Length: 134
Image 1 (cartoon, rainbow, N blue to C red):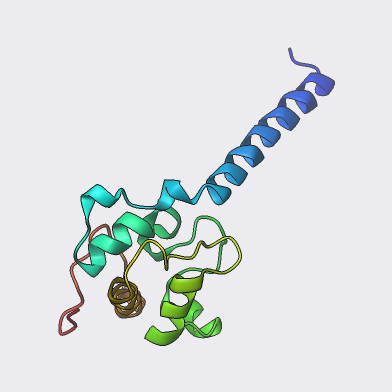
Image 2 (cartoon, rainbow, N blue to C red; image 1 turned 135 degrees about the vertical axis):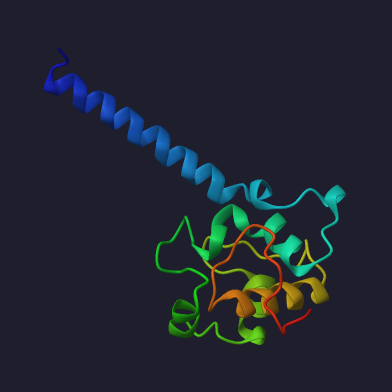
C-alpha cells in the first residue's frame, strides 16, 4: 500500500508534468498551426487547421467560458466580424496572432465562419450554415 507521503509525491510530480505540458502547448504555437503544405481553402478548413487545437467544437479547452458560442462572443464583445478578425489577427493573452500565418481574407473568412456557427454546434469541417456563404 502506498503511504500518504508517497502519494503526495506522486501527485505533485504528475501535476508538475501536466503543468509543463500545458505551458509547452501554450508557448509553442506551431502545434495548433496548420502545415502550410495542406493549404486550407474554405473557412471551415482554415478553422479546422488553425483553431480546432484549442477551440474544438466551439469550446475552448484552455480557458473555460471563453468559447465560441454566441452568448460568450456577445459577453466578451466578439460578436462582429471586425472584432473577431482583430482578435485572430493580433491574438490576445495566450491566443497567438495569426497575421503572419493567414492572409487578411482568410482571417475575415474564418471570423465570419465563427460568427455564423456561434448559434449552432460546431463540428469538424462543418458545412456552412444554410443561407450563409463565404
